[in-house]
Amino acid sequence: MEAPKMVACHTMPYPYGVFYCHSQTTLNKVYRVPLEGDNGDKVEAIVVCHLDTSEWGSSHPSFQVLGVKPGTSSVCHFFPDDNLIFVPIVVQSDAGFSAM
Image 1 (cartoon, one colour):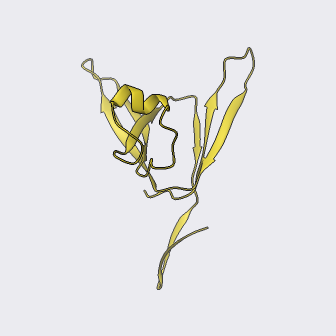
Image 2: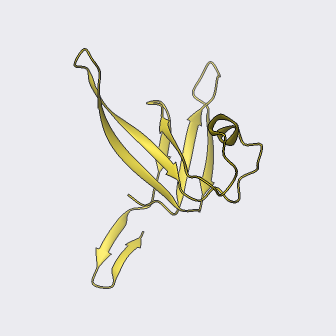
């Protein structure tokens, strides 16, 4: 699903539940991906792809790991099972799609 607006919440290393949440209003896509291990275990994972990285700082760890520069490549990553992502509900009308 396209997610032009989203809020992502990542767990923080505290002895109780603390989340670091941030929002993005750039071109993103969110995928639900079925994965299966060699032993037959199955899980569904959430993947977020940031399609426009042109506004990100050049020292962002993603660019260092991937060996790319801001705006030259999208960046995708899996969300751990204890993280949260919120995206608007997308509804279809006669005029097209809109976010609620």
